[in-house]
Length: 326
Image (cartoon, rainbow, N blue to C red; front, side, top):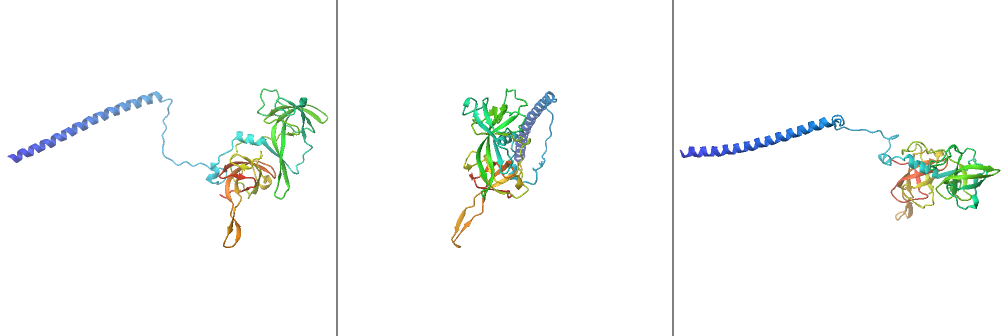
């Protein structure tokens, strides 16, 4: 009889525990049901309010493929990005080359400023001597504002900086720096009176008066590899800088006759170092190492201007530029 009473007691304890757990689970279920009902009502309200302005977008995992630029370029080329039109226009007019052998008439030059001013700027009048360019652009620089100058012949004012020469000493061209623009007011015999429309440097005596070059390309430059093998060197840096880094403009001794076009990407190699081979007792040159990337911006026949896009080390005049080895 005692064993039966013990069994009933144990069953009672188990049943009580089960009932308590069931009660807790039921209470939890009631709470979850209330939360779900509240969230459902909120979602329905949001959908009703923003149904017209918030369209439903279904997202799903997928693989996206993007076309590479012209040709199968290496990823490193794509990372360089494009050269915007604003940057291209800034570089385009700033630097110019008159190549050796180009048929140029005697160039007009600044004789003096009006009232014998030595230094002149925008709004001043200057006297020039020589034959004025006959193919001046019928346009006005974008930097000139609030002037009734539409349709006037516009000339460029340039200053000679340095002469570019090849490895053998042959003259490649004369470098010019853009100073500003001017228009013709009147002329008598070989003396002309000009009005300076814009100038980012002071206009001095002996500055040249030339027709402006055609505008820069209307599209941004996308880096691409040249189709021909290029092997040239850095001639100079406009402005006389010796050490070169990223975003510097450099002059090269290769041009369109070598197959270069705007946007072509070149690899800049540092000079090869030499070591002494103790076993053979000879001085041995080491292979050149890549030091940077330059993109051709403005090529002429024998000379080109390029923009340094990247530089892993300091570049110098005389460093070689070659077709990238990707």
